[in-house]
Image (tube, rainbow, N blue to C red):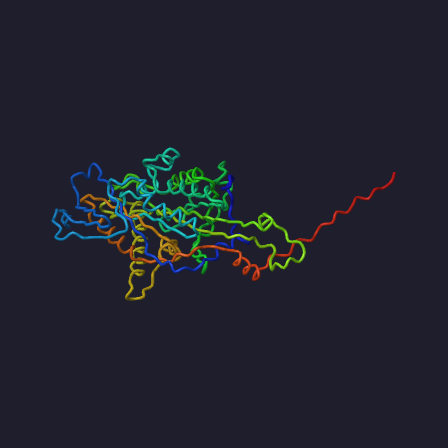
Length: 444
């Protein structure tokens, strides 16, 4: 690993690697894990009836009627998922189930996505980030969430490789259906990470779709990071800027969908017969090479999305009004479109149109939900009686997500691919050689 942060170029020969995917037949379903939040003190003694057994979870017991009275559930509803994490499961266990695979897939050249879904106050942000994003909380082995552990594991594994691994980080939120750059430099910044960012304060964010690259965010700030401490600085600053507010259900409720994106580039350079890296070797004369400027190297790229979805809420139950109510309407609207997209993707009897573009959230996650990605979902639920309707809704949605299939591809460029691209787009001719004219000497 290089000691100094490196910037991955978006154009020229450096940008070629992101345009090529090696086709595979690795179609797979989205992996879904369910985490049951421990009951809060005010919820003690009001269990809705959650029975866990291996990969199965049953919801039964008492439910609330429309009048608010308790009534018995006639038949427990059974759900099956890839993993079930009960209230005793710690943060390390959650990362072992989900984050470890995301790291390895990214280093192998597969795009990845991990998103947390659930009602407000069910523990989504805690699952991803733990008790905050400060340096102390980031290093806390007991409470650190999936993201800090993922960052440590990523750079630990990268350091063990002989290859060069470069990472770029960006952070945005979707607030009231508007994209907001949470790493956008405001004024003069003394932070070396932000000074090396690739965007200015006047750039607006726009979603763009490319037939090969997929969906991208134009104008998004990207910062090179060399270790997990660099990422912690960025995430802490971004979370301070994220829209949050107090509701009756959560005193620190997220009022936006937050997306942390990591772009990886893993380069392997092969030496030539003389032991010199081919990238540095200079061919003299006619050596018979079709393109002597080509590096004998392979390069893998990957994009990882870590998504903290805002929780669905009912205005009457959350006791929201004014701007908080408007935020809740936009949150519920985007989650409703997400549900429509999932329903369209899982309907195998009729080929339905998936309305990805009806919401910024689904448009941004289009590749993660149906394209070139290995995707994981963490569904967080509460076992409290008062939340049984939200728990059932979350589990039904998670069961639908589990049926969605994605088609992951290795994003790689090797020597032969580069040669073909160079023949189609040859490099510009070298600049003319400059001759140094000796300064005339005038006698006397």
